[in-house]
Length: 138
Image (cartoon, rainbow, N blue to C red; front, side):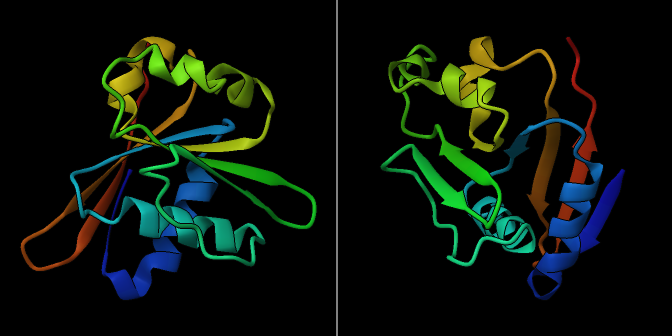
């Protein structure tokens, strides 16, 4: 499954991201500047979060609440070793059942759950983005 969209159509892509997700863990890969955080922010708004989601590059995790749900947004870009994710309790967040969005998850591959939703976001030369759902191979 693949969707081409502009940043003006980000809500459409966020809706698709949510609709195609069947687990509580959403991995979103893409190059720096592809729009991963922007897409996650749009998704959390659709799910009822009133504040804007921002990049947790320096804090590693940001948590957001809607009226009846909690969401966690991880950015593993700054990690030097996969085990650093364990130092702040990453596994407990996954086991919480709360929706977890993961950026730069390739840095923590050994600690990813067996089942998660996997998307790739690519920026095209014309400025459009392509969101593609990938199959997770376990």
